[in-house]
Image 1 (cartoon, one colour):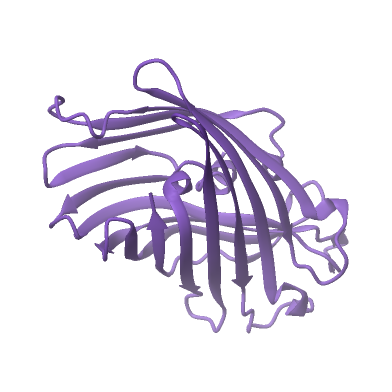
Image 2: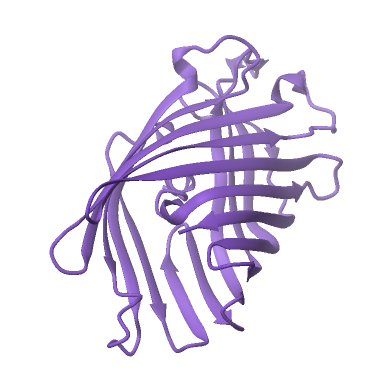
Length: 284
């Protein structure tokens, strides 16, 4: 379940992000190992008719593991991991305040040390219903509710699972978001800046090419799952251009190598550590 939400953590949040550049960093405690991720997102909405949009885009993640400790296998094959998504979505207005959205995400998730095979390709998607009353000033507490079903090929779960997110304003200074993959409570200093306390999920699952043999099993996948909490700050240069930084500590960190059945074979790391994520985004 946790892996599913990692893979879909951007499904709703990035609908309003037209472009994003991001850097993440997790050092390994009491070790020279460290995890860094560089991420780029580009989405382009195409107006089909009034209130109906086709959204096309792409996302690229370059993950550098930097495994400097001694391991019983050649770590060079895991130096860099690549996750490439093609984003295709369609959203349209329904009756009243409701809007529906459909998203389809073909994905390449691989170490890319050799030619692509069918094992490097995954299919993700989702259907969402959004009730947005954020701009309704007749309400004492404007809100946005997202209900959906998501499917991800990397989880090994052969059926869709639910997605829920609820965002609500308490007053002109405070708001909160309850849901998965991220929950927070936010304080707004001004139209340009805000600060938040958050708990969220992060991670990936990737096919390993040129896989090693460990404990008489071939390694087919590497996965990272992280539960992190901390504080974040956002500064709006304009209405659409935003810089942000999130820092905190991992409450759960599990970085493992898995076999073809996705069973755990070898644990690279499970020691909690410092977490940093920062970037720049251009949003609607």
